[in-house]
Length: 129
Image (cartoon, rainbow, N blue to C red; front, side):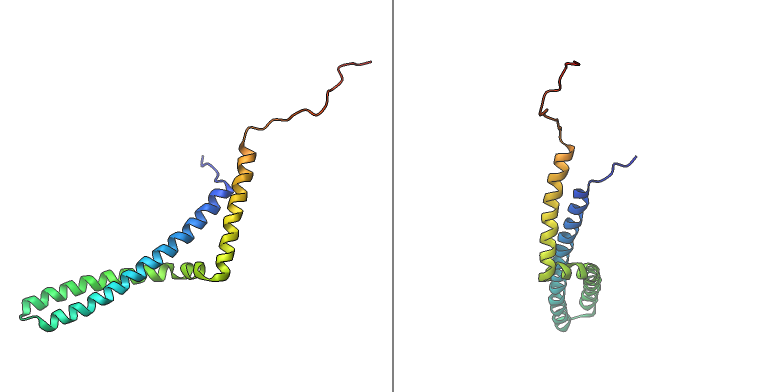
């Protein structure tokens, strides 16, 4: 039987997902930019290549680089909407409120799951007059 997740765990996973998408987007955009600069270098290498074999090797490298770049661009498109959602100022306020909710929820869960006891406030009469 699967253990039921606590609400705080679900909220935490959501916040981690948002953070992951934002980081993934920034990393992939940076990588795509690097691939674009590499492409310019390859074009110059082809320009100055002296023979057919050298140009063929460069073409193979370009082919691999373009495939890698395409994979990065696809990844960018995959997480772009979530990353832009996180970057929006109004949504940052919402995310901060979700973080606050997480803290409150964790405190509530800690209280409910802790060892609790009742302190008696008065004596119960043992007399049955």
